[in-house]
Amino acid sequence: MNCVELQQSLLEVEDGGSAEQRAHLKSCTECSTLLAELELITSSARELCAAADPSPRVWNSIEIALRQEGLIRPQRPNRSLIPSSGSRWSVARWLVPAAALLLLSVGLYIRQHSQPVQVASNVVRPANPEVVSDAAVAGLNDDDLLQEVSDQGPALRAQYADNLKSANEFIQDAKNEVAANPNDEDARRSLAEAYQQKAMLFELAIDRSLQ
Amino acid sequence: MSGRMVRVAAIEVVAIGAMTVATLTAQSRKEYHYNVGPKAVVSVNNPYGAISVKPSSGNTVNIIAVLRSDKVEVDNGQNGNHIEIQSHLLAGADVDSGRVDYEITVPADASVALHSSTGPLHAEKLHGDVTLEGAGATVDVRDISDAHVHVKTLNGPVTLTNVQDGHVEVDSLSGDVTLDRVTGPLVQVVSTSGRINYNGDFGSSGEYRLTSHSGDIEATVPENTSVDVSARSVRGEVHDDVPLQPKTHSWFPTEGGRAFIGTMGRASASSTVVLRSFSGKIQLRKRTANAK
Image (cartoon, rainbow over all chains, first blue to last red; front, side):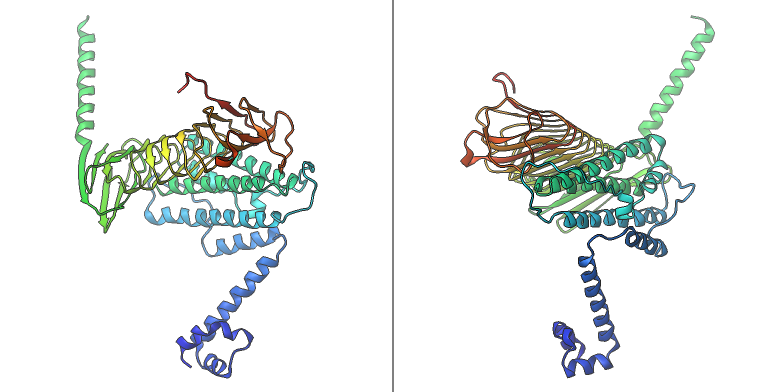
């Protein structure tokens, strides 16, 4: 069996594979590494699905990993108005994963709260007392975003600060609404829309930073 | 007038003249022309300045760029049927000196993607997809048919006029959004704090969803409109002055003044309209005879 044949029959390796497959994996570092990586992805995905509610530690770990990889950087002093292309992309490096994390958190949050619940219609439940900030949910730091845009002037910072505050209020209200009316599909859509508004704010900040 | 005043006035005139000459000297106009096939794609990224797109008569993309200074360049290129234009800011460029104003004509079936932080952005009489993005840009889209129209702004106001059979998605954080005679299978507007105004008949079988957090939502419809409509504001007021046949089921409490749900006109041929706000006021009103 060669590498192509092995990779075409990867699905069958799940239960240990045939003797032929095992022999090839023993002799081929490339295929055995590929298989190990696929298994890691599969097991990680299972863990992700099984997680009822990722703790803030999970998001902190992601943030730490991103920082170690250089994807999230501490605030840089004295950036010029027209940064070099290298520094421009370094800005995007943390904003892009931050926006991605935000969207990921949307999916996880809505998934957690989208299971239909048997309740009588027209019964208003009290708002969810558990208030989780986005920083805790997505590893985001709104201050970092504002620091980036503030380099382009206090007026712009104020503009983004206002919109960020509004977007966060939108998200919180939408979360409360989902908690109060868990069977309301429109409420869940509103929550997704609220997160998308915040994600858009990050996108626009990226655009500003790249100019 | 004293001699001193005359001298001062003369110096001012000379100074203003010199500044004008310097500005005119620095400002430059460039033109680019490309031949394209059907369904071309034209994307323009212009950090500061206006972009206006209108249909051309032939299979050409014609670009007129007015550069405010020599601190900005226009990078342009063609890759097959894709035309890409980029305003390239040089060192020291700012919102004034980095400004470029574009007037572009494209074949009517071309798709355009326009991006400018300051705008304004304008597109008209096209039937290809239109994507417009700009933080503070005023966005004006009109006379578009059978196309996707996607708009994103931070606080720039958005106006869509006469968009037919569109797949319309507008997102604005705090800009006001006005839709006048906009119909299609999907029309979706989300604004956190901006107002949303819809004026039209909601088409015949589309899904319309207007959502705000704190901005007011107002829909004005002609008397013969057929829609299934649900409206709810969690903390704001909800008003309607159209006759609605009530629905029996809803997921949310339809307490007076906060929500309504029902059918207007013929239920069999109606669009679905969802108006949703958290603290904004929602109004559904009938267009008066002498109104536009």
